[in-house]
Length: 429
Ligand code: SF4
Ligand code: SF4
Image (cartoon, rainbow, N blue to C red; front, side, top):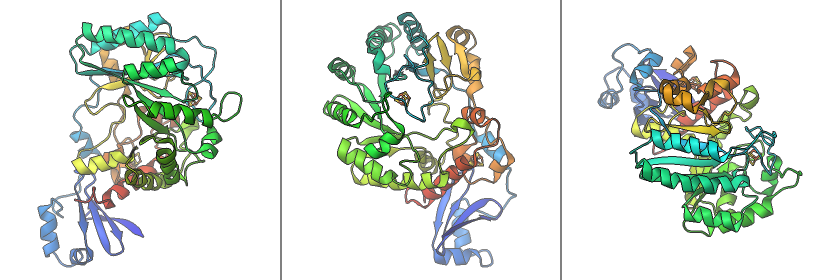
């Protein structure tokens, strides 16, 4: 059993079976103490352990800083510099009807037109003239329903890259895999796509939330198509896994199935979104299961990416990982929607606060700052061990939960991930 307490009013001490791990929640220093050192620490200072800790930067000297303020001072620039990638929402049409879909699918709204697509791509390349890379992600609904637009856009992107001296165009598509024509497969190979297939697990799990429009499962078809994609060396094929009530409790088994049976070695676990105003999964359980699933993936030669990596990276590099709204290089991936509108949040296509026209973005680039989250919005964040890894709910989460107060399951998730990463060998220095 682990217990947490504050050491010298500043550091979080996690006790487990007589041993302990220490965490400085702002500087992200961490350190492991064996049983003798834990006992030593409760003796009158200075002991050898006090001296050793002082060398590592853990000292009782000085008052406990205001952690929220200290963290805010560490942050250089929370405003994205430019949009370097577009998630292009070609259509809201889809051949599936997943219960948790955050897109309003098959609404009857018009698809993107060629002209709209061309204008969005022009904007992207103009903004990134001379840069090393831009990224394009085809998205829907099911984007392959408008494969004609993908072909048109890919050809245009190559021409725009030459015109604006962009060295590389990274292309990805997010698909449910239920439909894959030979023509689309050859196109993906030709442009060296990254293909992300949304699958939640073996048929009994997948069909809990992911069924075709007519209500029947598509697992046999999807499995056949995954085999065709995996067989193409030029493609980077991965699985986008959504944690649901059907796979939580079976995440490690699910990941093993995806690797062993489907042959997909890269698994990206989507971060829960508080749709309907709250997280629908137990945050603590999710963190623990992700850790277990990560180890299973590694043992099978696969890789599992999730928010858990944020905690590992933060502790490894001792740098806060506050911003999920932008890339590590300070640029933004935005969503481009039919009607020439851009959503600065690439997982929310309807919130008016995020929506801008291309002209507004061209003439008022400062609006990129509106997606920036307020760091540690509530006083409780100052007492939270996950402060430098979570930093508070994103703008999208704040809008979905209707205020600054974070979802308790989200907080449980982040605090658990910190503890897991701290005890993991890669975290404890
Ligand atoms: S396949 Fe994707 S777009 Fe279609 S309903 Fe499911 S989650 Fe939504
Ligand atoms: S986990 Fe919760 S309390 Fe902690 S920093 Fe994030 S939002 Fe604040």
